[in-house]
Amino acid sequence: MIELKQVCKSYGHKRAVKNVDLKLPQGEIIGLFGENGAGKTTLMKAILGFIRYEGTITLDGAPITTKNIARISFATSEHSFFPDLTARGHAEFYREHFPRFSEKRFYGLIEFFDLPMGKPLRGFSTGQKNQFEVILALSQGADYILMDEPFAGNDVFNREDFYKVLLGILEPHETVLLSTHLIEEVSGFIGRAILIREGSIVGDVTMEELEEQGTDLMTYIKNTYHYRPDRVSKALQDMTGEEG
Amino acid sequence: MKKKRLKISRLVPPGFDYGPELKALCWIVGGALVLSLFWFTDLREARRALFDRYLGVLRPIPGAVMRDFGKMVWPYMSGFAVAALWALSFVGVHYQYHHRVSKSIYTMKRLPNRLELHLRCWTLPLSCFAAILLAGFLLLLIYYAVYLLVTPAENLAPDQWKKLWSVIL
Amino acid sequence: MVSFSSFSMEAGVPIYLQIMLHLKRGIVAGTVTDGDELPSRRVLSSLLGVNPNTVQKAYRMLEEEGLIVSHSGAKSFVCADDAAVLRVRRELLETDARGIITAMKQMGLSREEAKNLIDTYWEWGDTE
Image 1 (tube, rainbow over the protein chains, first blue to last red):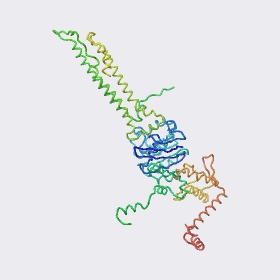
Image 2: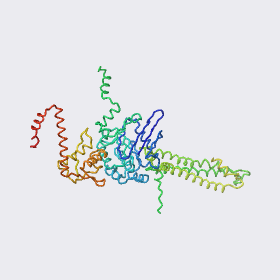
Image 3: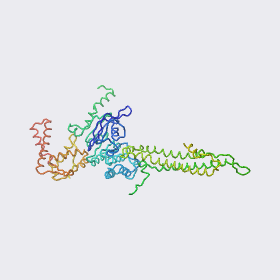
Image 4: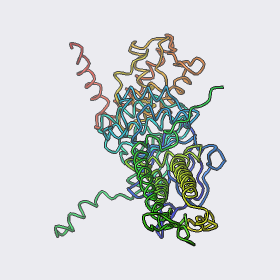
């Protein structure tokens, strides 16, 4: 389990993450939702140790260091592959650095998405780059797979394919933390939703709880964000000068 | 046990094409070598200044002192200093590489082996830096030998080697 | 292998219930029989695009109802003898009947009107 306790992060005067308490157990598919700049990326970067932060983040009770960092993988829309390396080259690099790298899964997924093996990554299309980025994260042999907006630029069929493959290959011990704005697309298969707004966790709910309450994710999110359906008509009224 | 072959590609950022980098460096070192050869013209003139021609015969000028080796050779060796610093500047290029096109720095930063990133950024530039300095130094030794060979003992100023270091440092 | 190709998701109904219902309807209709193998948790999750834990929950509850058995945690098989088929049939009928009655009551039908309606439409669809 990854556990965040009172995690804070500021950039200058701006507080990007405020007092975040979070538990991410093994074997869950978790959606992380929030507007751009709400702190989704900052949270993931804190877990991975890319940035300094206040508070504590532990993995099974131990701080995240070189000893256990291989248990966490990361896919990002910024891409973290090596642009001049081929798919095969990446497999070699990952095999060398991550003892639990799954070649079977890697080559299986490469084949499924029909990605070229001997071409440097910079020559891939945006969609292919995203696919490859996620394939690496899934093949690393990690227990916790963090994905930050991994499908920006992929078409909908492509994403659907990906979701199905993801569900088909995940082992019961693997956890996925998926940050995305495609809430409706993923609402069918995530098991839990975490809502972040202005650096604070404003909602954390399992789909089972929502089912029991007889509501759905979109309603929950709208309620949490105090979304007002009359907002649009009110704005129009204000702009056109018509009295209500 | 089979010895693991050390490949240059393992000592630079993954996928980085070090070919152009090394090629450019070879040209600079070549240029530095050519530049250093011009020192011989200085050497010839300095030696000639120890003699004067009287009725078509060269004869030593009494009390003439040969120009100092260090002061004479140093400007011609500066190409090697430039080449060495150039090689060292690759460190920055290598770190910067992990931010180009993608952010592969993220992958490097989360490797269980924390040294990998620095190893791949420093090894090649530092080796080149050291190799160039060593080559320059060996050349300096050879030139010094030539200097001693062509300079008559009576014209040689003392502490040449010591003076060389004061010029370098 | 139990087929889920005709499965279609209904909004607002818990997915694990829908999976359970699909299997039960299959059992009653005879398209699913005793000893049929079920897709693995992962395969079904991928097929339907739903959370693996949801499938797990549906399988667990079906197991509790005695309609499927899992061998050594891996493969699951339908376990429906004649008595079980009858039981499921009655359960589904009751549920469906309750649903129809509720709907008719909401429309303001009297008991007599409801009976007449059923009589009127009883043969509907038989000729097709």
